[in-house]
Image 1: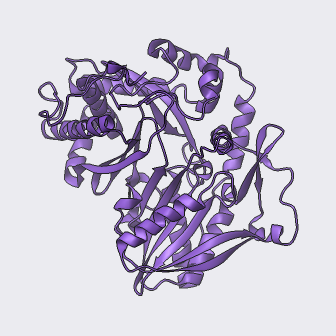
Image 2: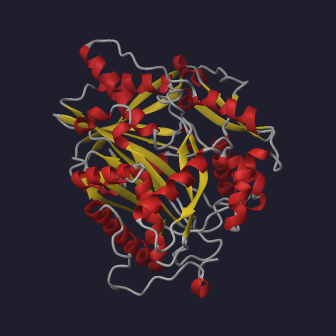
Image 3: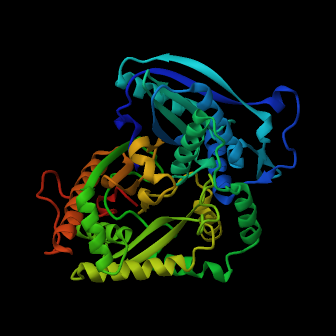
Amino acid sequence: MRQFPLEMHEVTPGRVVEWRLRSTAEQAGERVDAAGRRASFNQDKHFTVAEESRAADDPAASWLAVTFEVAGALDEAALAQSLLSFVGRHEVLRCAFRRLAGELACEPLAPGELALDSEEVGAFDSSELLRGFLVERFKRSIDTLSWPLFTMGAVVRADSATVYLAFDHIVCDGMSMPIVVHEVLTSYEALCRGEECVLAPAPSYLDFADEQRRRYLSIDAGDARLDYWKTFIARNGAFFPRFPLDLGVEPDRMYPIVNEASLLLDAAEADVFEKTCLAAGGKPFMGVLAAVAVCLREAGGPGVYRGFMPVSERGRGTWADSVGWFVNTMPIEFDASPGRDFAQVMAAVREGFAEMIGHIDVPFVRAWELLAPEEFAARSWPYPVNFFSYIDMRKCRGAERHEEWRPASHVWSARANGACSWFQRDTDGLHMNSIYVDTPAARRTMGDFLEALRRTVQEITRSGGFGRPLALPPPRRPALAPAGHGGRSR
């Protein structure tokens, strides 16, 4: 399972059917739970941005989606029942959000108050037309301010089907996507066999949000738990770590995006890379991060890597099977200066990661609000931010069936002002998906960065380290410039 743009997905044409969630309580004139629950910090900030963007007639739009395959003739009734059971199992998917006395309330409907309405959308005779339909459908149907907050459907063929679900970020994260695949297909297969489906317990994300708010809503900027953040800010010079290369962006401006995905290492190379990282005393994600840091430095960035890194808050099993936004974003820094070999940079990554994990408790949004209040009031991060994410999909629930189910995840955003890169390891190798601003400078910068990174991880695989000092690929375009040069990035 890997993440790549939906536009790259070769979905075999067929007949499209969709299922729309409906509240039977509202249909009967009943009120949903008036008491409600309180949203998490992530959800509150996300919803606030959507509110402010709508008020400014400048709507922010994004979605996360997952697709997977069903072999054989699709039992549409069984799939519909499986989808409804999945929604009933996860309280956050049954929530409507609304602002109450300044706070964001989640109002969950009971599983018994939900129904699915099916709709025959039509038949598509080409993959190109089908992809275009799905992209536009997700854009139109996913709205942070409107319930339901996801869409579900299938491309049905005589001997197979492609199932799709697209979500607003407010109800899920990237690690929720393998859970979607595992639960829907496990339930579907059991229903087709006439058996009862038994799944592991999945505590509610709303309980996680309640616990988080109780612990951190009352803290202030003087709280000792923010000392790690303060130390990072003092060395970084700002709350947000700047992406160190030129993307050609202007201050306070958002841009259309480029969404690209590439293979960095094939399966055999990725296996060798993993062994090399373990031999150097680190984990594969540390090796990738070390390579990223060295490539950024060689392209004009600083010798000390500083960036944001999303970290799962699911814990060791507590929330492992729960759908929700279990992500904390943390700053990480380490020395990647010239002259250090692979083992030395890996040791620095390992030390920096351990220091970061030791201070994981404070939610990112709360730290942002307390330590950078002026920037917190804005609808986006203030400038291109250095961001690194890594997931080993082989460790996800249901991974042993991924070759058969062929799941894929997809992310999309209408606009951006920087660059974000996600790395995934699966049985096919090591992959990279990047979303960045669509400017000539960004296309040059990210193209050269990808080439340098691929060569670097391949060199680590071949030689067990960085080998000779790295340099950029032979010039095929104007040379890169560090961010800030030429006055285009602040």
